[in-house]
Picture 1 (cartoon, rainbow, N blue to C red):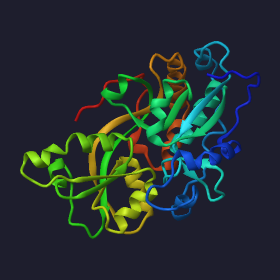
Picture 2 (picture 1 turned 90 degrees about the vertical axis):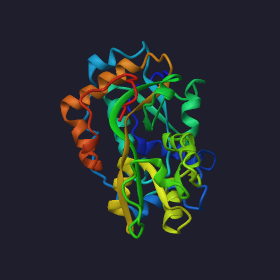
Picture 3 (picture 1 turned 45 degrees about the vertical axis):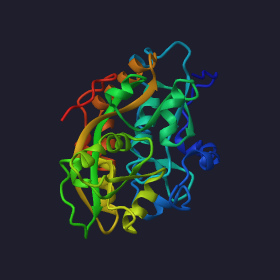
Length: 313
């Protein structure tokens, strides 16, 4: 945790130059050569300002550890909305997680330092203190709760999508994927779910599905569109957004809902303050504005919780 003497909030737009310098070692595209802003150029990105009106909430700010004026947040960049991406200028970060992080920082009256990292690298780095928290649509699972603390702010989860010409339909059992190539993001709950359940195919005497992992969503969609993959497993909100804004895709179904939260080192003292800040956004209308901006109103929560048990179907 870092506590410099200045207290002014610095928006994401003003600090992305540091993130850009980390692109090569952070979240490189394992399936192509796209630049950080490339995904945003092909997908409509909403630009409504839903954050600047947030004012400091003294009650929430008092819950911060004494002397806290600045925090370092790690984000995974390079995807498509509502995930974190760049606006057309290739410099300004945007996305649902960005809006929530900015809004919470304003409510707490703290400054943010943003660092870019690959999704799979963020959670392990929290324990070392490299980052104070992570904000990249981290699903709250019982396994993760053993090592990470979470403060929830939306409800998202796992789903499937494919090409419009595919004969695939609603996936209710992973045995329906046997013999197929399944594309997903590296280091995610999707990869873990798929790898842990590969046996369902061989147990049934069928050919196992193949899990294809990519560091960037743009590479996942390229793999699907070019026929190297048969189906994509990703976030419900991300899939729905992609289907609306990209041609030739169809959303299949929700598979497993998960709470999503800011991620912290286990035992963090920051959690109560962040929880109070999220609940303030819920009560003052900012929360609803953020979800409406990103078309994710179906992911609303009633109140923020600290490391709740994993949702069960």
